[in-house]
Image (cartoon, rainbow, N blue to C red; front, side, top):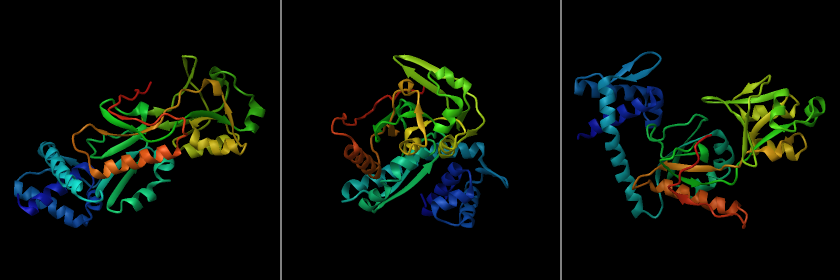
Length: 317
């Protein structure tokens, strides 16, 4: 294969996956004009149109879809071959793409990322922080991080965090006005601040002695930002159901009070997950070992060590 043709094919795959000439050019480190010329040259050489372009979007033609389907395994093998060279290097290197939810980016990765990159100076990382679940194979991510119950069963999963708990909070001022709920069902009489994630509103689920309850709550505010919800609760607007990491600092300050503590669902944890395949990038293995080590350092001596298995995390109830 001619070098120019390989570059053109790589450019085509980037545009097809990013669905944008601008984003594809940025990912490849070239100008949009150069990328457009590469696509035109490829289409002229093949004698077919691969992409449909409008002022707003880029889409694949039927021929383009067929070519992309054939190219992906070839490029995956090429990438694996290049990454395998890392086995002969003193230090892992290369690019590592992760998709993570905002809480994992904020509380898990952000505090340790600089230390990881200082230890592995030849690794380049791209971190996509978004609440929507991504198909890491289709979107060509090396790995993702999610809570265990949201990891697909066919993935290899590695626990990389301590317990993540969901708590219910409200301010002392709000409780003085409206009273304290004693059972999950009492929340129907309260102003509840609801959280929207891709796919719908976060359900308010509770569990006690094997009994599970889901309460349909109502309220004056819906937000897709946990920090906004916590601030509203602290300002006395209502009751909020959230991850403990967001609310605990204000609980410690006395600005929020936890509710229904004996009804909280069992804790989960963040897992780094990736497809089960024979050869993983050395950069990914380095990140896994780093996060495992960090978890060990932060875990109490009595806590059971994390496990690395082809586990089947719980599906979302």
